[in-house]
Length: 181
Image 1 (cartoon, rainbow, N blue to C red):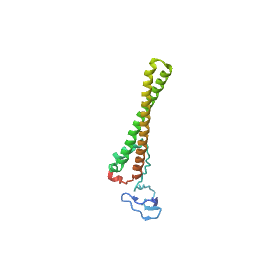
Image 2 (cartoon, helix red, strand yellow):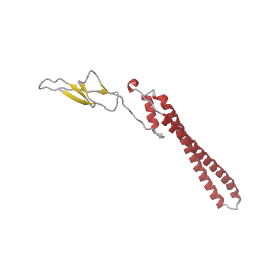
Image 3 (cartoon, one colour):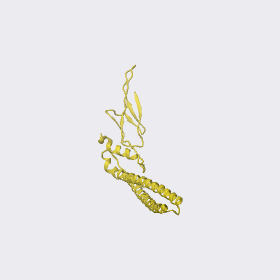
Image 4 (tube, rainbow, N blue to C red):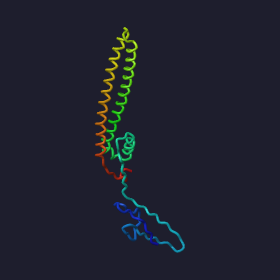
């Protein structure tokens, strides 16, 4: 019996596994001979081995860090190539955390400033108003400092994100999976 098994076309490096040898090879198929005695059945297992390409589209997304860390565990050779991306992701995450804290401080300062302003308005012309004017000035100063800090951190984040994008753009490596097992 002659069995045709499709070949991987367009990709090189695919071979039949084991002792299986094709009787003929065409551009699109292997032709395999199998002797089957009359009135009986037979099975032929065809296994192929070849390169597999996995493409990962990395972007500036924190959830991909876990994927990269898992990849480093599975492919130790990837550590060297992925470390700049992991470092850049950590830098962006750290700055994001600082921005969140700065924005929280900004909101607190804005709430304090609004409360002191209300107190000054309510106590206008009285002796107690002077104390609240001083506190209002301090709250406004704190609010300005917090806003400047947030703006500075956002600039740092933009720089860190650009550095991460560059690290991702520079990333390209190949590995032989059979060597990592």
